[in-house]
Amino acid sequence: HQQQRVIKRRAALLMAVGTGLVLLFSDPMVDVLSNLGARTGVPPFYISFIFAPLASNASELLASVYYARKKTRHSITISLSTLEGAACMNNTFCLAIFMALVAFNRLAWHFTAETLAILVVEVTVAGFARARVLRGWTSLVVLALFPASIALVAGLEAIGLD
Image (cartoon, rainbow, N blue to C red; front, side, top):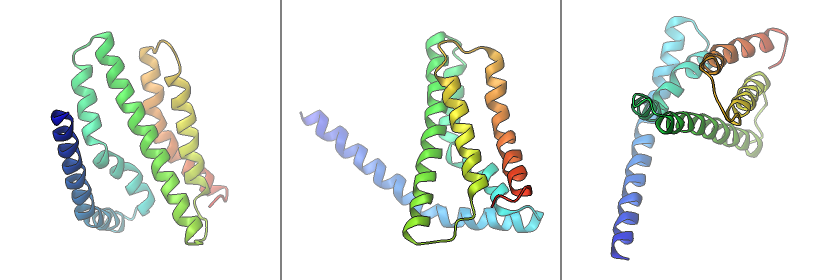
């Protein structure tokens, strides 16, 4: 019982520290991404679509690489599960928060292309995740979803979807 209390207290402390770090660094990160977009002439969406996931998911990526290096069936399964879970959780959670902000603040909706791209990627990854056996080529397909989603957004915006 005492051990459980210590574990819960430590977990709460680490969550509080993590939340504090996010609050401390999120605004400067947005400024850096906006500045990078302004200096390169690339729209801020594309800059944030590429760099923000890399920054926010670095720990999952490193943990997955660590497990994958063991090259056992169990460690590869853990590695893929970690990446799939992080991707789906981040996309779903961020999309839900974003949609709630738009709805509750009655903001104009200009994100149909981006939302459709996220949903297409999530459904595709979910399809691969449900497979009992994954082959090497499936990793290339899943990896190709990242640039394909950017191209999908650009294409949808080019045909008039906001």
